[in-house]
Image 1 (cartoon, helix red, strand yellow):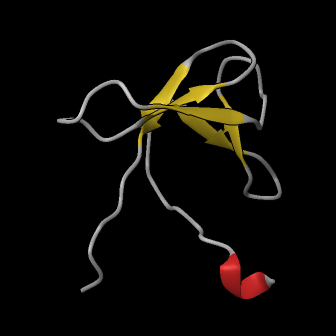
Image 2 (cartoon, one colour):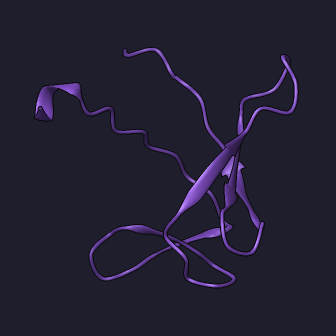
Image 3 (cartoon, helix red, strand yellow):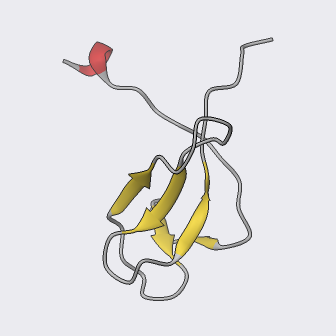
Length: 64
C-alpha cells in the first residue's frame, strides 16, 4: 500500500520538527492536525487538532 501514500511538504515558522522529523505543533507538541477549508481562494489551513493553533496553509505545487 506504500504506493497510495501522498506526502505533503511545507515550510512554516509556526511548526517545529522533533528528533524523528515529524511535524509537531509549536504550542502543545501535538502531532495530529486537521485541515480547514475556509474559502475557495485560499490554500487549506493546517490547524492543530488539540489546541487549534494555526500551523500553516498547504497546497499542491507543480513539479519542476
